[in-house]
Image (cartoon, rainbow over all chains, first blue to last red; front, top):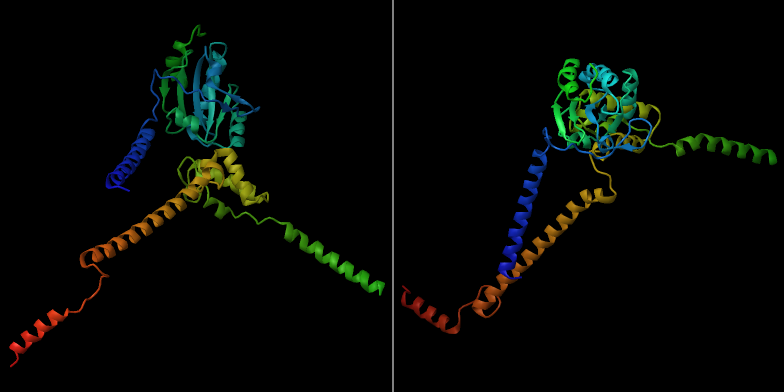
Length: 176
Length: 160
């Protein structure tokens, strides 16, 4: 093997290692989802009833994507507010969509029953969807418009006041 | 005679009945062992080191399944069904995950082969170099007859 071939192999090996390092850094740094960007639509299993569902099934409606977990304390205060908002505004133009993330499915189902949540619930056991949305914890909320783009983003729990003052005005024909 | 045979058979049957649960039993799952082999997905640490609310739920889940008599493998499978493959501290030895075990072994073998080849080549080139300079095998070489004569003459000159 000539010296030039050996040098080329060494340079390629170093470049490959550097490339892997840069790729790793890019993957780690690209976790944030910003307002205006399209919301991820990978299908997820339903928390109850079996089968899968994707955000794209709700295209044409406003969707408040709520990441939660049964072990999360702020989620317990937020859930009744979301249910009240769903009860008031849910329908053909809007829905809350719960995503139970990194949680035991049994605990998640128990949480839904305890708080009487009527809006659709999906399951994100391995946290892949939460990662795709760039969440750093639970709860986090993303208001997605009918075209599938993020319009509002709350990294934490939403309150009734926030829902009334920031979300409701965006919805068509919101009952007062 | 028949009575003795029947007694022996009864004794054997009793022994078999006692032994069969022990033989058929799966190894009892150790909660501590499982907690040292799975992750807390939220904390990113081993479950045994984690104390977050999610980790406490996961620990309770493991304890409950162990109390139900599930084996270690069954409990790990249940955790994977809940949290995905990432919950395992060590990847399972099948499919693509097998590469986690094979790649280091292959890399070690390649490195050892490269090192052996390098050492062999270095030794060969060292020997070749010595042969090239002297025209024969490397090693200490005695004086030639002329050199011997010159050496004797010099020593005789300085002989006091």
